[in-house]
Image (tube, rainbow, N blue to C red; front, side):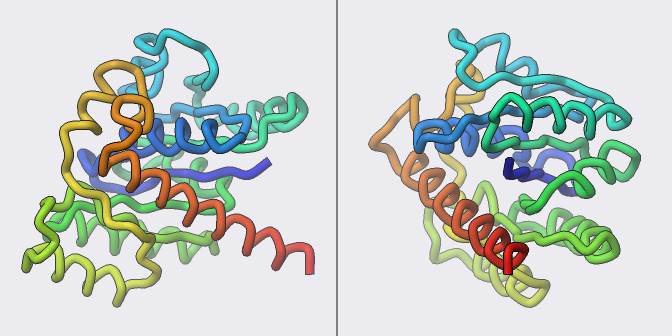
Length: 214
C-alpha cells in the first residue's frame, strides 16, 4: 500500500483541495483510495459528507492511532492512502511525515509560503523522507515574475513536482460539491493538471518501490 502525505507548516496552501483532487484522479486511474484526515479542521471529512458516493472513504483520526489505521487499510486491500496534515508543527504533522513514503509540499508563489516550505523541508530531511514541492494557485498566465521566482526558489531547495497548479475556479467548485476537478470538468485545464500530477506522483512512488526492492 502506497502512502502520500500533503504537508506544510503554512496554512492556506491548498493541501486539502489538492489531496481530494489527487485522490479522485487516482481512483479514476484504478487505485483503491482512502483519505486520512489528520487536520483538526477536518476539511476532508466535510468534503466526504458532501460527496454523494462513498467510493473514496475518509477517516479522521488522531496522530496516535494513525499506524493502526494504516495497518487496517493495508489488510483491506487499499492500494493508495492520501494523508492531509494540519498546518504548523506538532504531533499530527510529524505523524503524517513519518507514515508517508512520499511527501508533497504545496506552496503558493509568495514569500510566506516559500519560507514555510523551507522550514518543512528541514523537518523532512531530519526524518529522511522523500519529498517534492507542488507550486500551487499560480496565476493562469505563466509568464509571471512571481511564478518564475517561485519556480527558481523551489528548484534551488530541492525537487519541484510537475505540473504547476494554476488558480482555477474548478478547484473551488470541486471542493464545494464534494468532487474532484476531474469530475467537475473532465475536459478542463484543472483536470488535465491533476491527472498530470497523479502521473508524476505514481512515477515517483514506483521509482521508490524499485529502489527498496533492489
